[in-house]
Image (cartoon, rainbow, N blue to C red; front, side, top):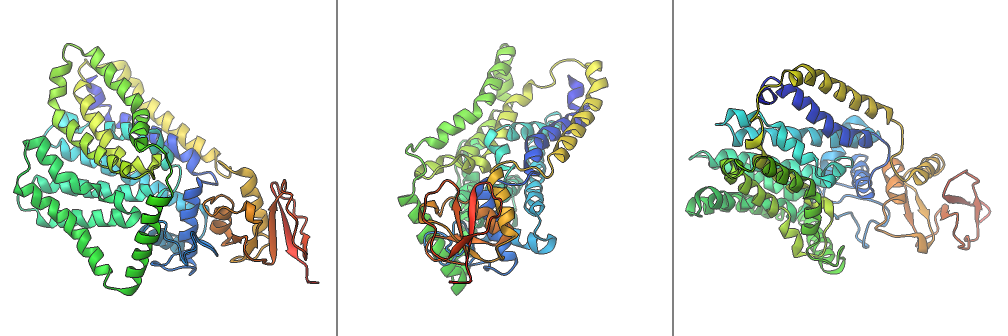
Length: 477
């Protein structure tokens, strides 16, 4: 098995990349996404055409919770994605290309961090594919990269911060690197709020794991990681627009959501979800120990510090979620790279302990190329297909051919849910069309199975829709 770490390393990388792409691209390339992802794309797309600004993005006519602008998340990711739309146009492949870029950056940063950790251990360094493999196997992780979730971008900033921090802590005079790491933490929090701050725990965890103490040096490093985001936010709050925007986000969205809109009755939801997400890894670790029972303990001790450090760092990205009752599986995505590195550190000493297998050497590379080619072909075959909400999306395209852009459709009040982003999300993303139950506009949309009384003055457009009837106000009224 020595060749698996040397001669065949490229082949293994191709196989791992094939798995990463196979779990994501055939779904990502299709039309439609999870409703939150469509929402975020719609907000950014609106901003790219001048409907909304960086500090005051716009989702729809009503936005959410009666706010005059959209503040479900801080504005950074919407701003970045809006620039992508300005450069590349309004195609659905813009947000898909952006998500794919985030995926590639994760692969690069995870493997680079692994190489930095094991830079003095060349055999382990060559296993940089292993943490990537274990990272993508978390089900909610590859699901997130099938969609344009904000966690994908936040995680890139967090990974960059951790990588810079790891490099900095190996050096004595590294103040500028700590300042850079703190800036990256700010960018992470400016993408998704408080969950982006967990890398500030890096120096403390490092001191505890590697030196069994927390001295003034690690406290100072932690202070730098905290003070940089504080200073940047402090500067932003000196200006009226950032101050108003961030105040709305903090008071009207963050505090209100935490106190009034729980998503789970169980405070330990995230830990329970993490356990089930980790079952394949726990089985793998058990099997590794079982088949190496005689050497197991000694081998584990080789990388125990690396395992413990990254495992604790990953938990720091998950445990704070339990402070509120607003918990969803994809909130854990930024923590998975470190859990992947932790599990890879546990397994690494057990890899390559056997002899060279010429049969594997002979067939591994062609197998890898065929696998990669198969994934690409499978992905291309999905182009033009719809992954979810087929009837709704079909209707949206037909409605968009009739209803002018930037219009508002009237819908019955019992069919309007401000937090259901499926119908309105697609309408906004593709045609900048909003819906509202509170005013009679030129067009009225209702579900086919609804028994609602159609307001006087509207006539059926007779457009062959799947789920809805579309009515237009008659010129006689």
